Length: 137
Image (cartoon, rainbow, N blue to C red; front, side, top):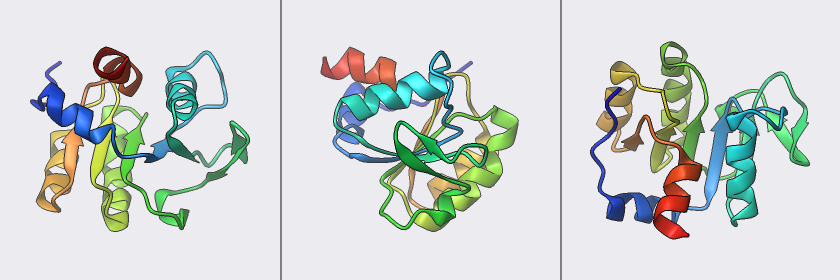
Protein backbone atom coordinates (compact mmCIF):
# COMPACT_ATOMS: atom_id res chain seq x y z
CA UNK A 1 0.00 0.00 0.00
CA UNK A 2 1.25 3.47 -0.86
CA UNK A 3 1.66 6.16 1.76
CA UNK A 4 1.60 9.95 1.76
CA UNK A 5 4.56 11.85 0.34
CA UNK A 6 5.36 14.08 3.34
CA UNK A 7 9.04 14.57 4.15
CA UNK A 8 10.61 13.67 7.49
CA UNK A 9 10.87 17.39 8.25
CA UNK A 10 7.12 17.86 7.63
CA UNK A 11 6.32 14.88 9.87
CA UNK A 12 8.55 16.32 12.63
CA UNK A 13 6.59 19.61 12.42
CA UNK A 14 3.34 17.68 12.87
CA UNK A 15 4.72 16.17 16.07
CA UNK A 16 5.02 19.71 17.49
CA UNK A 17 1.18 19.67 17.70
CA UNK A 18 0.05 18.23 21.03
CA UNK A 19 -3.76 17.87 21.06
CA UNK A 20 -4.80 14.58 19.47
CA UNK A 21 -8.27 13.03 19.15
CA UNK A 22 -7.96 9.27 18.61
CA UNK A 23 -10.86 7.74 16.66
CA UNK A 24 -11.30 4.07 17.46
CA UNK A 25 -9.06 4.08 20.54
CA UNK A 26 -9.22 0.71 22.27
CA UNK A 27 -9.34 -0.20 25.95
CA UNK A 28 -7.52 -3.47 25.11
CA UNK A 29 -3.85 -2.91 25.91
CA UNK A 30 -2.60 -5.44 23.32
CA UNK A 31 -4.15 -3.53 20.40
CA UNK A 32 -2.27 -0.83 18.48
CA UNK A 33 -5.33 1.40 18.96
CA UNK A 34 -4.45 1.35 22.68
CA UNK A 35 -0.68 1.20 22.93
CA UNK A 36 0.00 3.82 20.23
CA UNK A 37 -2.08 6.56 21.93
CA UNK A 38 -0.74 5.45 25.34
CA UNK A 39 2.81 5.90 24.00
CA UNK A 40 1.88 9.36 22.70
CA UNK A 41 0.29 10.26 26.05
CA UNK A 42 3.42 9.06 27.87
CA UNK A 43 5.44 11.34 25.57
CA UNK A 44 3.56 14.55 26.39
CA UNK A 45 0.63 14.51 23.96
CA UNK A 46 -2.89 15.37 25.12
CA UNK A 47 -4.98 12.39 23.98
CA UNK A 48 -8.78 12.44 23.71
CA UNK A 49 -10.50 9.15 22.93
CA UNK A 50 -13.38 8.77 20.49
CA UNK A 51 -14.96 5.37 21.18
CA UNK A 52 -18.72 5.02 21.70
CA UNK A 53 -18.27 1.58 23.35
CA UNK A 54 -16.20 2.84 26.30
CA UNK A 55 -16.79 5.43 28.99
CA UNK A 56 -13.13 5.90 29.88
CA UNK A 57 -9.70 4.87 28.54
CA UNK A 58 -6.36 5.71 30.17
CA UNK A 59 -8.27 7.46 32.95
CA UNK A 60 -9.88 9.96 30.59
CA UNK A 61 -13.46 10.34 29.35
CA UNK A 62 -14.31 8.80 25.97
CA UNK A 63 -16.49 10.63 23.48
CA UNK A 64 -19.06 9.12 21.14
CA UNK A 65 -17.99 11.36 18.27
CA UNK A 66 -15.38 13.94 17.34
CA UNK A 67 -18.07 16.63 17.38
CA UNK A 68 -18.70 16.07 21.13
CA UNK A 69 -15.18 17.20 22.01
CA UNK A 70 -15.22 20.81 23.23
CA UNK A 71 -11.47 21.36 23.34
CA UNK A 72 -9.32 22.28 20.37
CA UNK A 73 -8.14 19.33 18.29
CA UNK A 74 -4.92 19.71 16.31
CA UNK A 75 -4.61 16.12 15.03
CA UNK A 76 -7.30 13.52 14.42
CA UNK A 77 -5.64 10.09 14.54
CA UNK A 78 -7.80 7.38 12.98
CA UNK A 79 -7.79 3.66 13.85
CA UNK A 80 -10.67 2.44 11.67
CA UNK A 81 -10.71 0.31 8.51
CA UNK A 82 -10.14 2.27 5.28
CA UNK A 83 -13.72 1.72 4.10
CA UNK A 84 -15.08 3.23 7.35
CA UNK A 85 -13.06 6.47 7.59
CA UNK A 86 -15.19 8.76 5.40
CA UNK A 87 -17.82 9.68 8.05
CA UNK A 88 -15.09 10.27 10.65
CA UNK A 89 -13.20 12.57 8.30
CA UNK A 90 -16.43 14.42 7.45
CA UNK A 91 -16.94 14.96 11.21
CA UNK A 92 -13.30 15.89 11.76
CA UNK A 93 -13.41 18.58 9.06
CA UNK A 94 -16.07 20.40 11.10
CA UNK A 95 -13.61 20.64 14.04
CA UNK A 96 -10.93 22.13 11.75
CA UNK A 97 -7.88 20.12 12.86
CA UNK A 98 -4.54 20.93 11.27
CA UNK A 99 -3.85 17.24 10.52
CA UNK A 100 -5.77 14.04 9.88
CA UNK A 101 -3.50 11.04 10.44
CA UNK A 102 -4.62 7.58 9.34
CA UNK A 103 -2.64 4.79 10.93
CA UNK A 104 -0.68 2.09 9.16
CA UNK A 105 -2.79 0.17 6.66
CA UNK A 106 -5.46 2.90 6.41
CA UNK A 107 -5.99 4.81 3.15
CA UNK A 108 -9.14 6.31 1.62
CA UNK A 109 -8.53 8.63 -1.35
CA UNK A 110 -12.06 10.10 -1.38
CA UNK A 111 -11.98 11.03 2.31
CA UNK A 112 -8.41 12.33 2.09
CA UNK A 113 -9.30 14.62 -0.81
CA UNK A 114 -12.23 16.11 1.15
CA UNK A 115 -9.86 16.99 4.00
CA UNK A 116 -7.19 18.43 1.69
CA UNK A 117 -9.80 20.68 0.04
CA UNK A 118 -10.40 22.15 3.53
CA UNK A 119 -6.70 22.88 3.96
CA UNK A 120 -6.07 19.96 6.33
CA UNK A 121 -2.79 18.05 6.07
CA UNK A 122 -3.43 14.34 5.49
CA UNK A 123 -1.11 11.55 6.56
CA UNK A 124 -2.01 7.98 5.63
CA UNK A 125 -0.61 4.48 6.06
CA UNK A 126 1.83 5.56 8.80
CA UNK A 127 2.03 4.68 12.48
CA UNK A 128 2.39 7.68 14.82
CA UNK A 129 4.39 5.62 17.32
CA UNK A 130 6.82 4.29 14.68
CA UNK A 131 7.27 7.72 13.09
CA UNK A 132 7.78 9.42 16.47
CA UNK A 133 10.39 6.86 17.50
CA UNK A 134 12.13 7.04 14.12
CA UNK A 135 12.30 10.84 13.95
CA UNK A 136 12.33 12.12 17.53
CA UNK A 137 13.99 9.52 19.76
